[in-house]
Image (cartoon, rainbow, N blue to C red; front, top):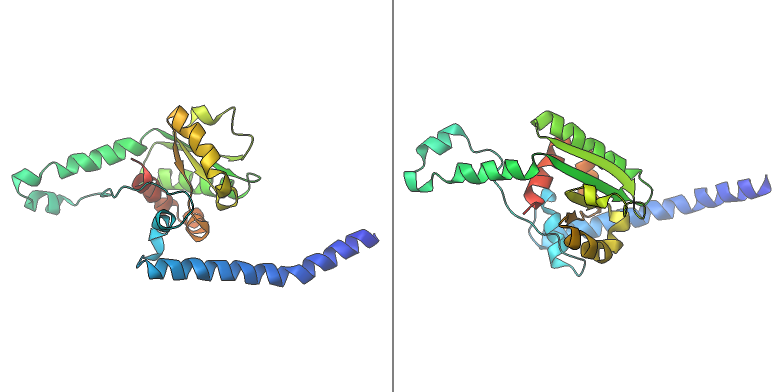
Length: 194
């Protein structure tokens, strides 16, 4: 009983420090984004400018309007085909989200499922814990590493490259935003696929 009380007191004492440290890290990430002139949804590009492993990005138009397509000259008409290929890239996609204990990864996997339902995309997503993925990773097209297991990026990259799987690793705030924005999670997937 005494040990339980001590553990509870320790948790109460350390919680404010942990929250302050988390706020400090969020502020530093926001400052880095501001220095690079990025908007809040461009946090993935920060990865390319830091010493952490880079996340490859491609800009893809989401949906051109019919009026815009009609007003373009004939020479510029292939652009809708590029959009069709972007849709093809995510159609039938299988995504595995990995974190330390499959808790936060379930949040992003659910957001991806909801976003797929909202946008009509054929995307399946699953959550898992890092370390338990080796037997099933070859069944997926994309693996997303949560921020708490981002330090394993280089180890995972060797395996995913060998298997032809795309590996993505969003930063902390970006990851949290994606768990809260299902349509944004689908857009983020589309933007980060080759």
